[in-house]
Amino acid sequence: MTDASRRITLKTYTSKSNPNNIIEVQVYHATRNWSTQAGYYISVQPMMRSKHDGFTEECFTAFTGYRATIDPAPRYSAKKLESYQAEYNAKRGQAYMLTKQMVKRIIEQQQLDASDYGIEEL
Image (cartoon, rainbow, N blue to C red; front, side, top):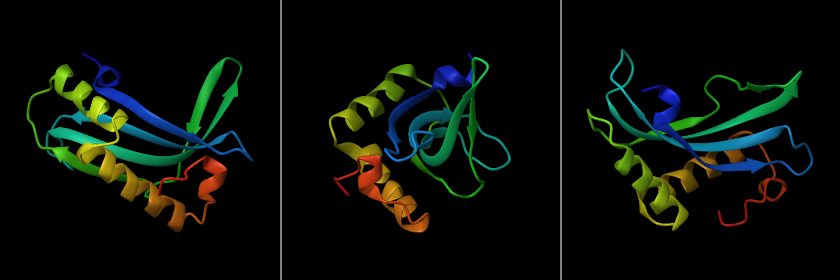
């Protein structure tokens, strides 16, 4: 199983003034490595996305995004990953609450205009 199949993009906030600038929200399962424990994570990352010759390029600056552990779980379950997506879409649960906090921090630290990204609920 590839890493891409263990990752779901929950929301992409796109800048109205510059559509290449986005804030992407993802939930995923990561296996244990030198810097993380195995488990489910939520991440919020500001980035620039552009298309060149049929390819999509995503650029981001290190340490500008946030990641938080939702559930330390050594084994992957597609059902569990999809349950976090359902909670987020229903605007409830830990994934949704963490996302709100992380998006708010990114908006403040990067000095972005929340309304430019269509973010009104913070």
